[in-house]
Length: 357
Image (cartoon, rainbow, N blue to C red):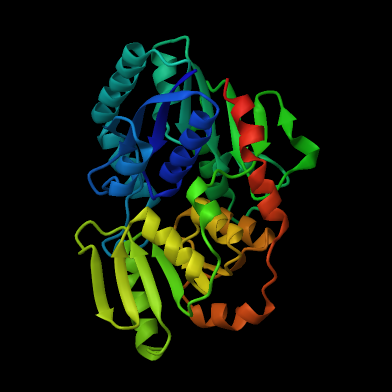
């Protein structure tokens, strides 16, 4: 069967999921014929994605978050107004998506949480099946641990998630663990996370450093400030900063890297513990490699707050509103690895591939 991937380009999670799924599909004898990535002018598609995905990649403009002047906090009202002001650009994207579907004629379209593919299907019907995949759909379940006292944010998050799954033939909810009470309901399925095959080949070592991943470079001063007080603790930091050098050495115990998938996985497999914004994919990678984790959800990013609650329930580690790395260091002696997660991950190809038809 032939597949068209449409990927939301915020962060690295959806892109690495797309790489992993393509690997599984090709091993099963299928083909991904093209990949479309929804992005904006503030984000660059990492080089590793072009290299690893191995097929033609085209970009289109898609709704996205706006951040404050310090590039730290999501600003919801500003994001809404910005996206409304760019409706004409998004209409062009809908036309582009439908033209690409007509040209490539895929059997299946797999949408990694972008809001436009379902809308494109509303405006122009096509025979290709639409399958949506993402951890966000897990929070449709009553079993999902959600942050308390966030009613409006919760409803906005669930509304947006439903928008990304508009007109979907199937919804695959990636989950840290199986939910036996509702594995399948109508077109809804709970399935294991998608990890790239490279991670299964990595040794799990401890080279006495902490690995940090920053979605937004605005948090870098917080990391630098902590490092000044704890200069003997080695930190290696990956950040999404298109203005930075590939490698920036602050000093021998603080090094910043531009996003690089192979190097990131190598560092993750050899670190003592992991500090990150609460993106689902890297939490899964840390869980698989049995690395204790401190999660710091991006300010104003309710989805990441949900991820943090869910990850702690899955035994990934701890979460905090700030990069209080001391708490992670104190937590290490009490951490217990989730050994069931490895077995759940191994079931991914057998459970997911049959659903993609």
